[in-house]
Image 1 (cartoon, rainbow, N blue to C red):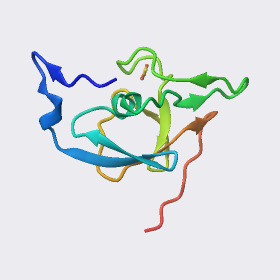
Image 2: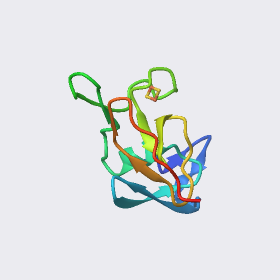
Image 3: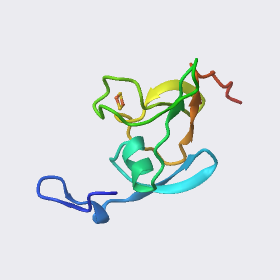
Image 4: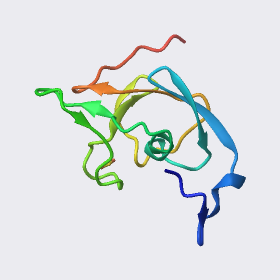
Length: 106
Ligand code: FES
């Protein structure tokens, strides 16, 4: 599910990898790719569940317009994962409804 060679973007296999955690599972992502692209490469398709009917939602527009891909990223809800680049050590969780802010220990 990952484009390895692209005529304009080049060879994805040459890019550095970063580790991110999605719902407790550590996956490897390529530097520069979006969270949702990294998830799709691992066959992870559910980003959130709707508030009223609890239906699953995932990548839809892929360009930051629909908000179907929002997830909780490092404790912050409503992050559009299709336009958010992966960073080493990110913690990403499936969002339930409108999500909740998680306090950080600092
Ligand atoms: S898939 Fe539409 S905003 Fe991300």
